[in-house]
Image (tube, rainbow, N blue to C red; front, side, top):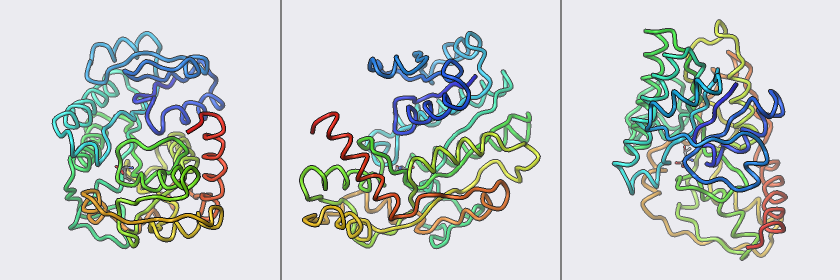
Length: 314
Ligand code: VAH
């Protein structure tokens, strides 16, 4: 049985759908502190779980006989800078609860990390799996902390901690407080207004992947036999592109698209992150392979965002 925390964020519901199709609807429990829509409830089990409440978490794990946890709850980079103390609680104290829970109940626990776990002192092009990590955001600091805590619990207690560092993840759900989210917002704006104001400079190169690849990498990685893993934390990515390159591709579908650039504080964050992410270790150790390149990603996003507008209106 699998428990997903932060279930109503960018990755949770799509991850639950995929896991349910593989392991059965009843075996994947989505959780969050948010009241779910009827659709979420109809799709499968949903429970309240506050990652800051250790006893509450114990209860969920015991009652539902959980084997794996996928711990998505976190405040992302840009929103974290606006509320540092909440980010410390959710991202760091929440992680302490998760790893302790995994140790006590011998769970396999997945925690996503990110390109945001690197900083201005890290090599940016390419950024290898093992290198200097001195992030300048609370989000990045909390992710380095999570990586180290997980590795430590693995080494000390044998906890089956698994972590992938994701690049910007592109999905057809409206964005949620990240720095890479312009690459989602631009599709929604292009199809609704034919214009987009980008908060990053046109030449800001960042690693990215489509959510389908992201979730497939997660699920494949979760089932790799322990002996194949040479480390517990792997970089994964699909491609790198700039806002300008993305806009050019979208313009093939929306020829009237106008993009203006007005960098804000998120530019500083992006400038401290990897430009090209080296995921060769994941490819070599457990066969990671992306499917979506920029052309395929844009084609699919145009389809999905069009569908979103047809269903939900503006
Ligand atoms: C953010 N999407 O922008 C997240 C992230 C790759 C970066 O983890 O904050």
